[in-house]
Image (cartoon, rainbow, N blue to C red; front, top):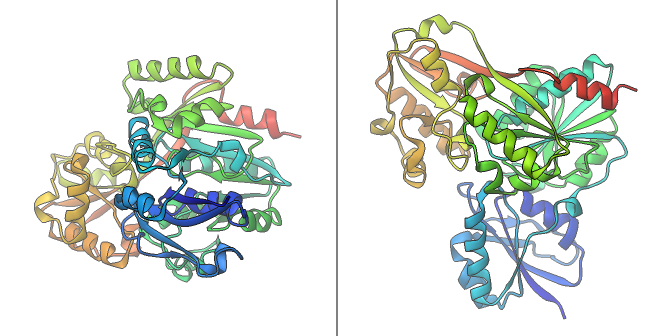
Length: 438
């Protein structure tokens, strides 16, 4: 009997699970994906060119809000949960909806979806969005390069455009961003790698991406997204923890899975966290994964012209996903504002334009910060209009990209970045050299 399947996702893990498990599996008939978290991705189609011989017309993508009716109307047998950064209780709410509608509910085992590489793989994952995976990935690349290794990063998918043109994407220059019509969210992950002269891949089909990346690397770095598990089987699994959100490491899916799988557990942001919270996270790691080697690290703020911040009324523009489904109430921009003496952090809510109003309605906990939302040209335009309309003296841009390359800002702008820095022994470098020094 052929089972009818719905894959719940957010244009990333869901496509990977389809590709590695369902695409050519005649036991199943995937009647559709459901989409959430990312704006405007439902209503699209996973194209026939990528879907395989069993799906000559492709696979439709529906809104997650219609899950119950989709199951009932299509007599679906199985719902496969395939997205990340979700509270455990929310996962079970989805399971309740699925089972009430008459379908089984499944989460595919993490190691089962990990592709095997012919090269060494280091995965950098996290227990929540915004823990500091990317800065950690860049530090790993820096260490391996100093060891004489050829290194290529592969980023968790963000295929928000034409999927047929995003099967394999290679980024080695700023021109590649325009070539691939990247959103702000994509640029945030790729641009810091380009600044350090590194190569980073992304796309839709991670088997094809892996085989291409292997041709130019001794070591492949998996640069994870949200708190998702690695798509590649790692030789060293690094997981980043955030002491600003103690307790989240055991209460979000699949971050807790990463906690249990970790070889190296990095408690990041120790320089700006309450010591008691650092200890809470340490104890959670020791209780749930006593074999993990624990490292303490700082998320070091860097920036030019930070003296301009003192005494100014500032607008703090932060990384979008961290403030939205990452649920952080502040980021590097707020820390910089406080550290460098801003007189006020200006609330952008009276000045919101267009789609930014929808974002704040969906995520009311954002507060008096501005997430750098840019999943579409319209959102980028609305971000520009909102920044320029806000009554402030100066903009602190704490998104990982140079916003002024994309939008025109009508007031002074100070760029704040953050980089990995070891806080104590053992260091990340000592562990990597011990593992990959030969």
